[in-house]
Image 1 (tube, rainbow, N blue to C red):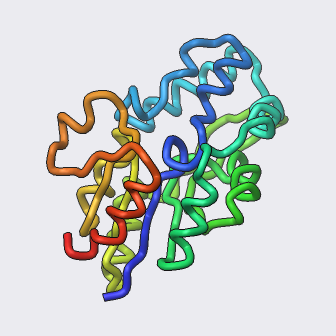
Image 2: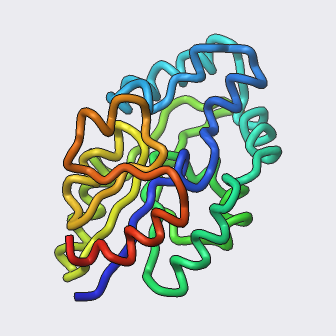
Length: 201
């Protein structure tokens, strides 16, 4: 069976964007990510409310992103992976955020959400579909793919459990203990090795 590898983006190959925005603005509540809050809709509604309250424009956020580098070793990891398998990034980031990282990573295939912008202010976000990561994995399975997935946060669990093989990578505290059926790894070389053998999972 043909394989496809589906990776989360933030925390797996790139840094967490909102933590960087929190550092720039000094707003500590923006440090909360899907590693802390399992309900993504609730998390984004709160973020957008904070941005509105403090009048933080999209242009400031994209300026912060422009100064970030992908995680050390992630480009070599992705390049090695793409030489052997089709790879897709399944992310809860946004099209308006991602281009800087896509350039650094050699333009991998990315499925993500989009933001609605009015006068440089984020007013809402438009998800692809509900439970988008799991449904993307299911779609690939319906096309006959064996899907191997990698993620780090609460919002990745449904796709990890849907896939034929799922791995937590540099996971949020408590997740490996809560989901002991999932492999948990910390280094890209370990992850490559696990991916190579996970077809038998």
